[in-house]
Image 1 (cartoon, rainbow, N blue to C red):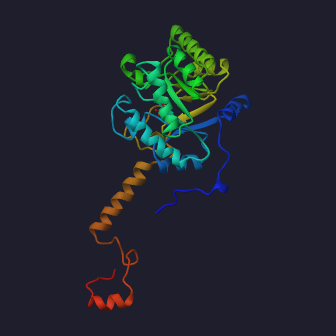
Image 2 (image 1 turned 45 degrees about the vertical axis):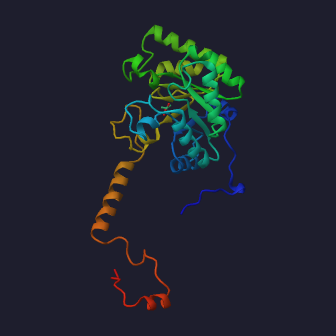
Amino acid sequence: MSITSFRESDRPLPVTFQALQEKKQSGQPIAALTAYDYATARLVDEAGIDLVLVGDSLAMVVMGYESTLPVTVDEMLHHTRAVRRAVRRALVVADMPYGSYHSGIEQAVANAVRFVKEAGAQAVKIEGGAARAELVERLTAAEIPVVGHLGLTPQSVHRMGGYKVQGKTTAAIAELLHDAHTLEAAGAVLLVLEGIPREVAARITSEIGIPTIGIGAGPDCDGQILVFHDLVNLSFTPAPKFARHYADAASLFRDAIENYRRDVEDRAFPSDRESYHLPREASVALGPSAVRRA
Ligand code: KIV
């Protein structure tokens, strides 16, 4: 049994995009993290993280796919709803999965509306640069705040030829700067910068007015985001250079599971104290007991 409801009086002041904008202006870093389910989202929120992203990285770290491409809108909605139920303070942003905004603006807007209306997301994130400007404008006009995502965009894995650091040539840097300015002009409220050199992220961050959130983009962004499973060592892959393990959940869980299995096999779990008992009269009526007291 667990407590899944909150008392109204416990409700902390919710984070807004305006508050993140103020953080950029006052030089206070923004802390963001992904989450995909109720339990972890609740911990993330209670730890004071500003923004929870229901990332399409869940295709890899939760569902075991080799890329983010297979996850569907319905699967993303399912996880976004679970996160929404857990989060009281942080902003909840949902990733639009691959294919959900690539076949026309009308389809993209209809899918984005589902994230807000059916799952309670406060914004959607889409990958890509200037080519997404019209979509960002349309979503903004539909009252849906948009988070852009530039640099190493995992949904472009085939076009990029793998997960490679982007923005390393003069032409690529110029394109990233153009993309960042174009998305800002189109109405994006935040930009995720992934897998680009520190110097390039610093330049974008200083040139644009909206906050940048980096992942593998160095310390000069306005904020940072990590994949939850990388943070706690649950991703079963060698950690990327930019990820830091703040805990070893794999070892913690493995030890707990092995200890449980051992206790069950040794009949050390459950004990008599962990069992329910009949009231005395019913116990007498049942007759001599075969219960072996631990
Ligand atoms: O899907 C995701 O987790 C992301 C973050 C890496 C920014 O897009």
